[in-house]
Length: 87
Image 1 (spheres, rainbow, N blue to C red):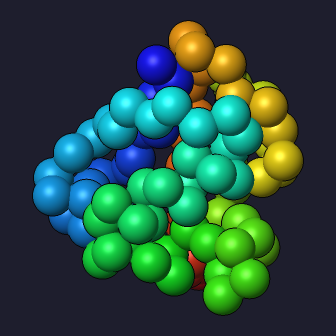
Image 2 (cartoon, rainbow, N blue to C red; image 1 turned 180 degrees about the vertical axis):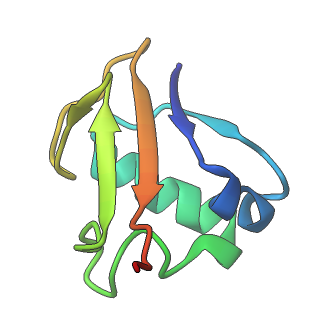
């Protein structure tokens, strides 16, 4: 199964899990399933139309990807929300 890995900032919204196994065939469907399984995540990764939010970076096996990217059995998806701040 593919895995979605969550950063520490989102783990508390996914019952403390740092990774979640998914069986969906695209990154977007996997993220929708993740939000359906952990409703507290709703709105943090996907917008109201189901698209990846502009300030969220999603990587498939280390490469930036889009929601329609195909997902294979051994793939790893990393979700990285933007970090704000400055000097």
